[in-house]
Image (cartoon, rainbow, N blue to C red; front, side, top):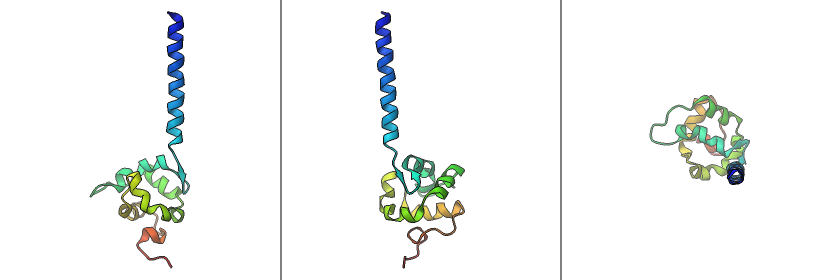
Amino acid sequence: MGKNNTIILLQFAVLAIVLTMVKEATSIPICNIDTNDLEKCRAAVTGNNPPAPGPDCCAVARSANLQFLCPYKPYLSSFGINPSKVRPLLAKCGINSPPSCFSGKQSE
């Protein structure tokens, strides 16, 4: 009976390790941010009246290479982000000079 418990415990440990590896593997670094960190901003960029971004979200926004993020703007919705809500989020986080793709100005 003790041997069976050891095998079950070992199987559980292996499963836990595999699940941890899968979770980490689903995270993709893009533009100086980890795609899992986008979750910190989800509430502030979804819905009709999103709440103000929190400090964790603003930290993600400030660390992002926003110019590099521009080509990915059409794909933000696949991460649950409404692209039209990004500019207000950036302003609320004190980012007053966003790249043209998020500022509404046409790039030259």
